Length: 158
Image 1 (cartoon, rainbow, N blue to C red):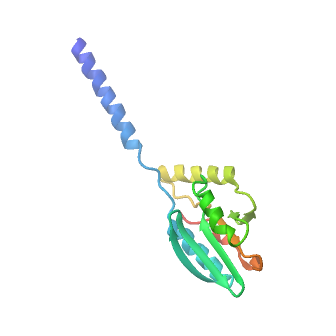
Image 2 (cartoon, rainbow, N blue to C red):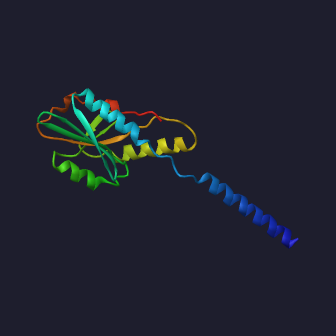
C-alpha cells in the first residue's frame, strides 16, 4: 500500500511539474520592425530624410532636414536603457517621450509598463491585441516638430 501511495504521489508531482514547464514559455516580445517602420514613415511624412543605426537597445532612427535633426527609438517601458537614451539625446536636446499619441517630458512609466504587461499576457494566451509602444526622442533646438504626428505610433498591430 505504501509503495502505491508513493508511486501515486510521484506521478502527481511529475504531472504537476510537467504542466508548469509546459505553461512556462518565454513571454512573447514586440516585433521591433513594426515600430521602426511606423516611426520612419511618420518622420518621412513630416518632411525628414531618415536613416537608421543598430544599437544595443534596438534601432535608432535619425531624421534630418535643413538645420534640424531628430532621433527616435523605441523605449523599453522597464527603463533598461534609460541612461543610454539620455546620453544619445544630450547632443540634441532634452529626451522626451511619445506614448498613445501624446508627448511627455517624463516617462509615463506606470501607464506604459502596465499597458505592456497587459499586452504581453494577452499575447501569451493567444489574443492578438494591438500594442502601444513607448518612443523616446530628442530634437535639435531649431527643429519645428509640430509636423510630427505622434499619433502614428499610438497603436501598432499585434
